[in-house]
Length: 74
Image 1 (cartoon, rainbow, N blue to C red):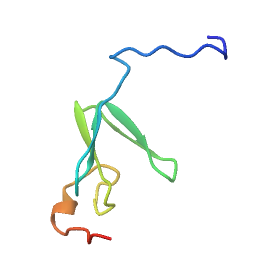
Image 2: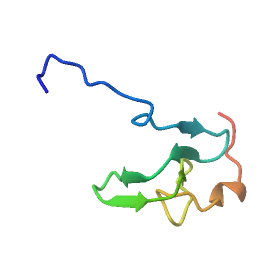
Image 3: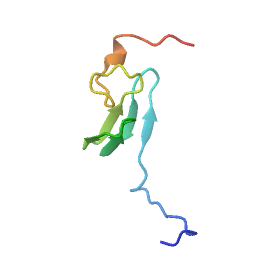
Image 4: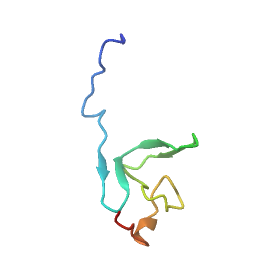
């Protein structure tokens, strides 16, 4: 594809990302998540919970640790 040509996207190319209050980020799967250290984690589930509180023992995937303690409101 030429550089000056914008890629076309279809509904099949678009992934749903749902932000949940006080919980994980829900991403339509399958996904490959790259962590800050460069490693990758893959999930072939139809919906994947990505940890946003960093409490998960399975980070970057959510293990519901956010339910044990609530964040304080800034």
